[in-house]
Length: 387
Image 1: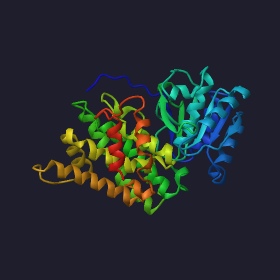
Image 2: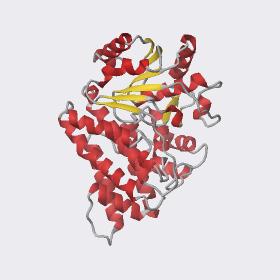
Image 3: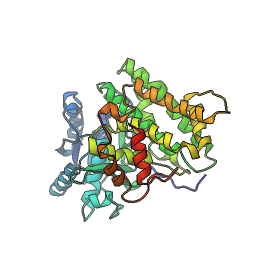
Image 4: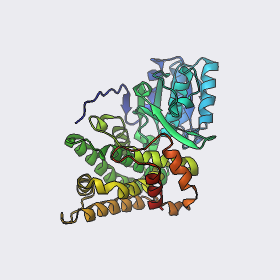
């Protein structure tokens, strides 16, 4: 196990009706905030009214910025930075899923950064300052409510890049499973795919002797696999949402990557896919991750056999480790398919047209991934395997 430092200051308020506490929690930090959200769903569901009523009751003024889209756009981030500076806002409340929270984090950094916030994401500049951010989570998936990361899409360059650090972890996050009841089943499935991918990015490591976190990661994935079908049957299953919502936070708050090298190659490859085709991140991962596994398992047979047996209950002869691995991948794809997710690019009518350009962009700053470092031709091969 590697040496590590772990720090997570995010206060979590979990459970039914906890969103009604938002006013008193925000009041501890600010009297005026930016209220950041996505489309009209928080208004049609009544959540917007409940949140604003709570803010008003606590004496917190707010300025609104809605319109966050999946694969959150840099243009809206710029708008939020300008608005915060004009209104002298020093606190941001994000109400929504990962896209809203990531957008809020980008705005929070941009307000405190003297240059172009995109220079942080592109790797040209660094910062360790941001406005405080808090969240009310409505879509369990990205784990951004407790994480140190943010991912933003630049419409003008066609890039989708990540940046972050402990300084942008939310100061508090409210997780009320009841707020998930009205989600479409496909959105739930995409969230489940994202959670599993976050666990696997940490699981597939070159770091030896990490059995403790291996076992927790395996248990996390198995719990998600068990729980997601319960939601397919009843999207108002409170206990199922409790487990899914908490799993989404736990697999991406950093604790399960402590002491081990993480990979993140599949995420880099998928980010370019969703940047070009604007598909749901979770749907892209249900396609790319199995293709990545097929491409890299040959040099890491023991770890992939362990994954197949412990997570997917594959019980085949040890005389054929490759068969064990491939059966594990097949079962994972079957699980994704059972949730209504794609497992091939062709299912989304995506062909090879942009593969070369995408592979070049993915590796523009060097190889990606840690388990195996992947160059341009490797990424191109994975896109082709995903067809």
